Image (cartoon, rainbow, N blue to C red; front, top):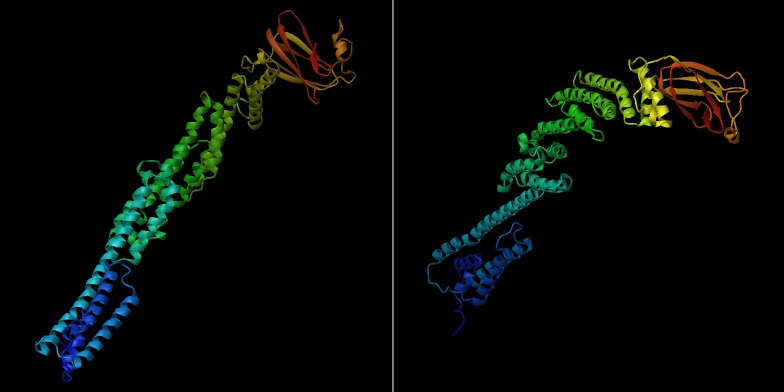
Length: 502
């Protein structure tokens, strides 16, 4: 049997029908002309294309493969037309009907292209939705982490949202971005929701930078969403730590005053500062006046670092700083008294000397000088510091102090009364050797010289004396005198290489 019918007279319509049927990619033109191997080749080419193209993905089919397939179909159509020119068809239907069928079958590849494009679009949508879900999960997973750790991942998620809304604005994923941004804002600012205001500050500052990444039209009301919350966080964080040493609350108040000068929170700054000064000043009269003084000094400096753009705020804050200074100065006296009572005589001496120097017109200045004298004596004779000195003076008992040393000295005394005075050095006196002072009968101030001296009147009772050299490294000497009525007392200062008393 022959594999093909005998050649037929040339027929252009038949040629067109065969070529057109081959354009369907199914090789039907070859089937009508009994070219089974060629028909199989068409099927193989189409199957290979389908295997590569399906399932559809966003990247689609390689352009090279599509081009090769189109070239193959054109070749099959041209070759089929040549074959059909002289080959009878196996189907005896009228050629116009077959031609119509060929035109209908062209809808197969055309429809396939449309369906494939739709499938590819859906794959793209799914890919974008997957990207959106990944970004959402990234935000959710980092919501409980420290902001410094989570911030880079927040930026990564924000980049995805921006790309979806700008590069894929018509996608379903882009349509979900506005709701996701709301979730993003509330998640990033989670510390604010929990009223952890100090932790919320960097989070909310970051959210104010988001409009630099996402278009404001896309953000809508989220553009200003962080502002009031940040102002609240700045105020709450700073006011809670107000006056606390080592806490940088002025930075938060300063940021609030300069960034949101007209906000309700900014208007609360100066009243809060004023209240803090008043509250701290009350501590001067409490159990820890020294701590209150230090806090007032710290407050004064910190208040001075604040800046405000509202009219009157800078002036009011300046007044608060000056008042803190004034209260600290006044509280220094109470601090010195507390130190003295706690037997911290070194600190009490320094504190009272500073108070006397810095407050020439204070009503407590006179007593502060007395306390400083008693504190200095107590450094040498701790028993002298058991009672707080008064401003009392004078007495009925005469005490004369002579200086039998070549050094100028300051005589300090405390007891029922407290005071001090200076004596010039004795020009004709010398330092005694230690051996001389150990001899029996040694009596300083007994040679008949004209010793520098001063007589004071003291009450009965125990008085503590300290003789302090003014210009040498000699050690101060001390004496405890129990004064009784009916006696005249003499104190003698001399030097042996270390001061002593006679």
